[in-house]
Image 1: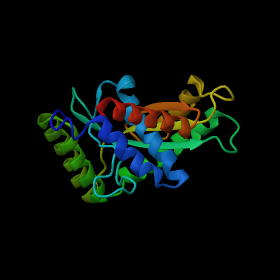
Image 2: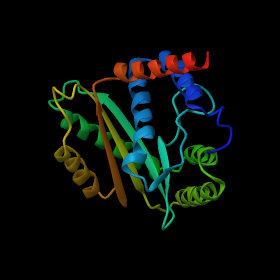
Image 3: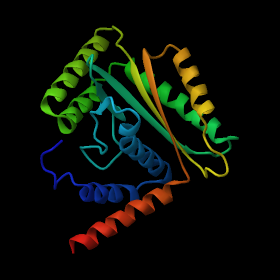
Length: 227
């Protein structure tokens, strides 16, 4: 989105993130960081997907409702729906085990959303499209979203294209996710026939405090440059 660059600046976004983050319980903080990483990194992995989703909930400072992510893929025009799950290793034996558990959780939740006619999810996605995309792309996404909404409300199925994100928060030197781990998840989810097509994005980072500390540093630096 090109208009109102000052209003949508990185400084304003970081400030709003920290305001929301600091007041949340630990479990919510983990989810917030995971979604933020997905918003930042998906373009480097799937350049063919144009994000049609905003990061923040628009109505208040609670957790975002509806779909975590939505995308427009062109040629042919199709809409993808995204779900992100994040977590620390906990009692699981390896980062790959946690990765797999998160991907399966994301797949279950997204499948439930895409087979249940709850209009508020699509209403939120329609608003996001106007905020994130140029008018032509926004119109295309909105047409596709409305078509899916009507189909579900009429008892029909829709083309379920899934973007699933998994963020493992654990020391990489102790246990790291692998390509074999991601392949295992893709094989399981694709074989379940829940979706017509699936894209996965796996991320690992040592922990949320390191990420948030970096964000705070950037905020302090921006404040110093403008003072």
